Each structure stands twice: as C-alpha cells, then as structure tokens.
Image 1 (cartoon, helix red, strand yellow):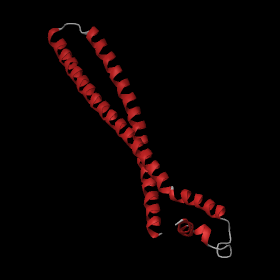
Image 2: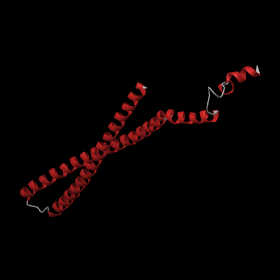
Image 3: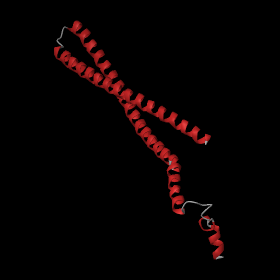
Image 4: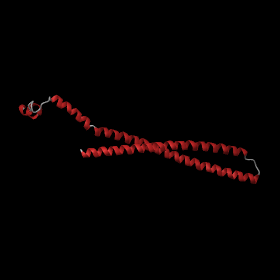
Length: 155
C-alpha cells in the first residue's frame, strides 16, 4: 500500500528524462496560476468597491433631492412674502399709512433669498458635475468588465 501511494504521486514514478526539471520548479510555476486565477477576485473586489461608491453616491443624490425640496419650499415662502408686500403697497395707496420699515424688511428678506438661491445653484452645478463624472466612470468600467468577460468566455 505504501508503494501504491508513492506510485500515485507523479514526482516519484516519472523518470528524470520524461520529467526533466525539478519538482520544485514545477511547484514554483503553480504560484503563477494563483495570479492568473485571482483576476476574477480582483475584479470582484473592484466591483464591490464600485457598488459601495454607487451606494454612497445614491445617498448624496437623496440628500440633494431633499435640498431641492427645501429650496422649493423657500421659493414658495418667498413668493408668499412678495404677495404680502404687494398687498401692503396696495393698502398703502388706499390707507395712506407708512410702510417703510416693512419695505426694508422685505428687501433684506429678498437679498437673503437671492443669496440662498445663488449658493443653491452653485451646489447644484457641482452636484451635476459629480453626477456626470460618476456615471462616465461607471460606464467605462462596465464596458471594460464586459470586454474582460468576453475575453474570459473566449478562453
């Protein structure tokens, strides 16, 4: 039985002429197999990383959508202030009472609103830049993965 187990392992029963290099070299070549075989592992890790990036980016999209809703609410609130101010102007002509302090407050509110609108537009611009860059990179990675998959299938 001991002889049978020795016969089963190729390094012992093959003569040196048929198996000209040492078994150590042959085993050493097997380490390259792990490099070749690990490419799907590397791709899987990159895919996981990309999915994590996408999840984080979708979180940013959700936050940005909430900011858009908040901005819309502020816009409607400001429109309401404009209506009130118009009503005060019309009331001034009818009642002949001063409304200068209310006018000052309104113009301060208007200035604050336009500053908020400007910062929102800048934030919106940077968001869309990030959005386009993200999907451009995502599409490039997807195409590369598809090409690698086709190469794997061809092998």
